[in-house]
Amino acid sequence: MQVEPEEESLFEAPPLAEQERMVEAILFASAEPVSIAELNARMPHGSDGKVAVEQLQKRYEGRGVSVVRVGDAWAIRTAPDLGFLMQKETLETRKLSRAAIETLAIIAYHQPVTRAEIEEIRGVSVSRGTIDQLLELEWIKFGRRKMTPGRPVTYMVTQEFLDHFGLESARDLPGLRELRAAGLLDSRPAPGNANEDLEEDAENQTDMFDPGEEE
Image (cartoon, rainbow, N blue to C red; front, side, top):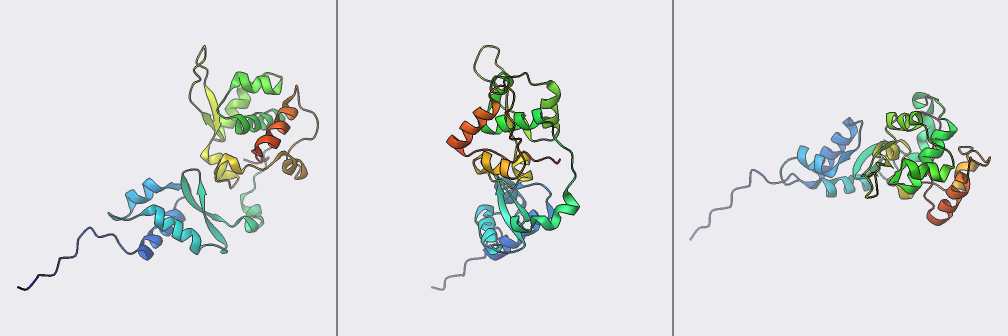
């Protein structure tokens, strides 16, 4: 009895090499990091965006651009050691106030953290303008409300914050000594015990971030 050959499925996933090309095209054209779910939604049925992007990441190792993970998403970015080549085109200086830098540092260390907790660490009150500026930069966002009296809102750093500083997660934030060596953190004592609290966190967590001075 002659067996008829099976018909090729119309929904068969394309070869992995072709999936890599698709992921490359999507990431290259997107200004924002793209999640695995979004990659899968854009690609043909049966494609595996996670495998394809990880293969693409390996293929780009040592190149002028890198495939990097940003939080739960992926993006194509300039290789870290070549970032200086882009400085003239991308640098737009706008200094953050000392209060904003300290507030952002505390949020990065202690997230999710309430405004009252930020004020307790800094030793001084936090103005609404400081919080608004960080929200406008999209470097912080609202977190869940705490299950404490008054249900205060909490603050966390955002994926845009991680992307801006080339970080995969908050665990990759540099230490306090690195910031001071780079001149990005004032060595003067901060109001209250803010610097002491930050230094203690840096020793315990090595979770400090580059606050920067540009938008």
